[in-house]
Length: 246
Image 1: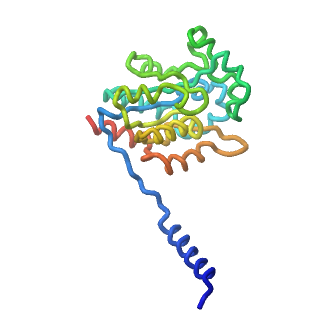
Image 2 (image 1 turned 135 degrees about the vertical axis):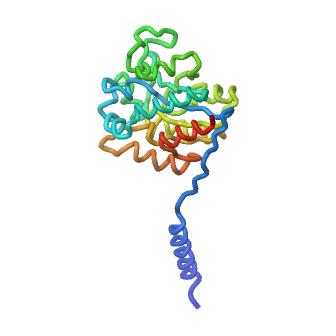
Image 3 (image 1 turned 180 degrees about the vertical axis):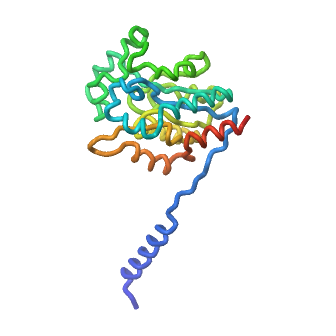
């Protein structure tokens, strides 16, 4: 008779092999209900998406490769054509935010390079065409008087702004998510919305991320999108699904 420890090892090994053979993740999908679905774009701002933005040196390659700028615009244009609500969760830093006593790595970088800086919470002085402003091609969609712009998130996720309240107040519980940047604000919004009971479809080529010595943020985010979100679509797929609800 084989010792119990040996039998356990054999059984455990068999389970590991069996698990690896069936490791493909399910795709729960998300059905678009026009009354309950919205587009959400995180940080569609010059500092991320313009070649003149302060972060372009580390995100530009990923933005260009994914055609991110045009893909976000496609989502905005399609949403407006279908009367689908659009929500923007922006990132702003005011002078008082530079008095923080500690930051994480990317927070430290953003504060150092003046990313998303504004003159103050109650003024738009110097905002037009600044790094914190919307990309010029997005302004007709965002500044149309219908798009809901939440208060700013301050680190990465919507825990520090009123986005969830704004969604709930409009009866929205399904979100099509794109924006910047993939492994930071976009992923953090996905995680928190999932925790809050929303359905989330992430649009994989309507985002991008920094490529630095430590790694490719976009590739890291893709794994987590697939593990956590209800589904992951391309822009083409998202547009087709939104138009299919006419």
